[in-house]
Amino acid sequence: MTPTYTPGPSPTVTASPLPPTATLTFTPTATSTPGLAQVLSVGLPRLQLYQSPNGPVIGQIRSGQVLTLLYGKQDSAGLIWVEVMDSEGRVGWIPEIYLNSITATPSN
Image (cartoon, rainbow, N blue to C red; front, side, top):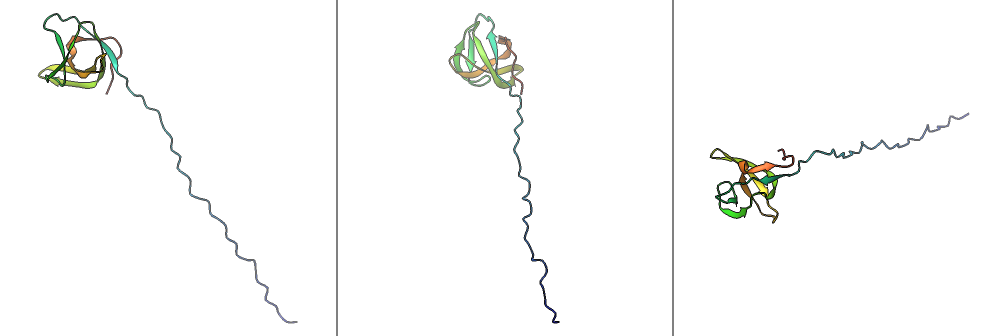
């Protein structure tokens, strides 16, 4: 009898699993919304809307007018100014002491 070489099992290639795929998860965050404030009755002089605290005047504001409180707040010479938008869409600044908040104010 003559020995015969019989090859062993054939090598097989197995695919390794792909690395895990990253999944983006969006977590909702609270976004503050602008509040509303009403202009207090101030009499004379007329209340004005300023481009910046103590800056150029960009419009007149009426007593009782409702303004949207925006996110800017600044101390200028001991007077707190807040950024507002009027019903005409003008964005400017007004001293906070002339406003009465009628909805929750935004937080930074």
